[in-house]
Image (cartoon, rainbow, N blue to C red):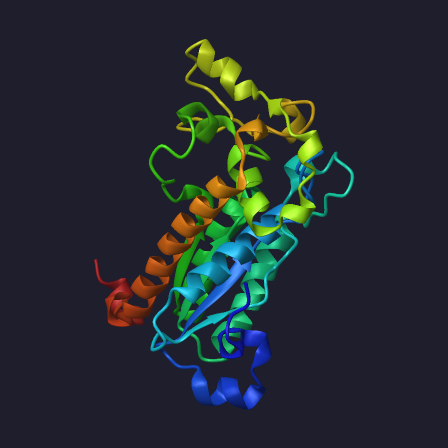
Length: 276
């Protein structure tokens, strides 16, 4: 999907930015990864899904909403996939610093509303830290939006698949069949069971995700580095998922545009800070 040129930050001139960007502008920064997604999906899966959802969300926005889609940060924090060929990863310190420094440049252009739109689970921790740093340093409204934390459409997939199909399963494969079908190796689709399923079957509270998750590498969950049943995937489901997640993101952009920046606390003066 291609949006009108004026929706892309990189299509504008420096004078366009100077004249257009102001306190009402919402900037959306896609954060992704280039990493292994098993034998059936490309290394670009998180990037393709993130940009597909972002562009579909922007297509839903009213014309009067001043929102700009930034170039994606394609490489993120992918330590959990580092043992698989093709994975590209920054260190945690570098990944956080890149988001912070790009965010600082966005703030320098006059933006006060920034959405960090993340399509890779491994980025969550650095997104949280970078967002807080940008809020503290640049007095911005910084929204952390992980699409995989959006509630999925009802009855889209079995509960076990939604819980344990964390990487390369039915959800991601379906969206790729819709967004970039030529990149999917349909002859390599399989059902990759996760260690999380085994632990859940034994009623263990501890698991790879959830209320008390342990740090994991992809090969800890399945030797193939993939978890989930890609055999459940189809393009129609992918279209439904993309439409649903894009609608949620569009609503979030609208909420961000309408947020009263006066609700953010002003910095206390030195004499106020000393008061008991």
